[in-house]
Image 1 (cartoon, rainbow, N blue to C red):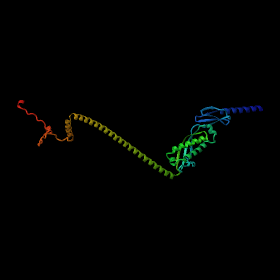
Image 2: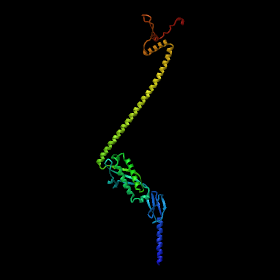
Image 3: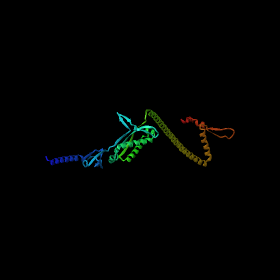
Image 4: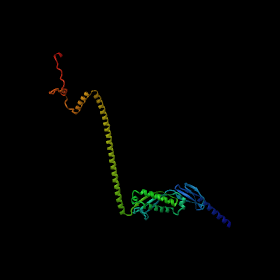
Length: 318
């Protein structure tokens, strides 16, 4: 075999290999949970987010870097050892009122700029971890222990999220913060935890008693308002009744006054007799005529009480 034929055979083999490499490296697929950056001779060109089959120039001209598009979780401050959660020393922090606590949290984040994620930092997730530690320490260091252990956790989470977001925007590594959740804020030993639990229980008891007192106060206030409204309503009713009675008395008086003007003597005597009947309802009334020293009277009441006798029959009536 001549040397020329050997070279031709080797060339064909190399060409075949290059063709195979070109065919296998010119296509790539993306899942719905992935995104990709196309690198042309190591330089970032395009970002692809559409799932499916895509074409690119063969290697080594272009290559693909795939990144997850889904939400990721960063667990700060705790680790699992043989199924048990253990807090690391980096979770030990000092609160604003100089108390030591152990705090750990979970950060929800995602890659929003793949180019910056690949080229603006050697290890973006390490940058995120350090920024999380700095943010949590800063916020815990300006908070009171009561807030960190009880009702202030939501506010602390919001402040950590805001500060962490600001830091990640400043570092510009293509990461966006979605949520921050405090998992546990614990005291360093059992004695301190026991004392704080006792204080917390006492505070809860105080709040319960205050709520009960407030409820009783509101109940008594509502009852008092109801009684007040009932008294006012009754007073208004009595007022209206007395006004109507007064109007009736005025009408009667005006009528009597009109009769008195037309016949004063008769009206005066009638009023006198009616008044005596009202003042002395059970008294016997007599009509007397005293013209001398002898008292003469005519008993009207006894005669009114006597029943009339039936008339006697005579012979002419038969």
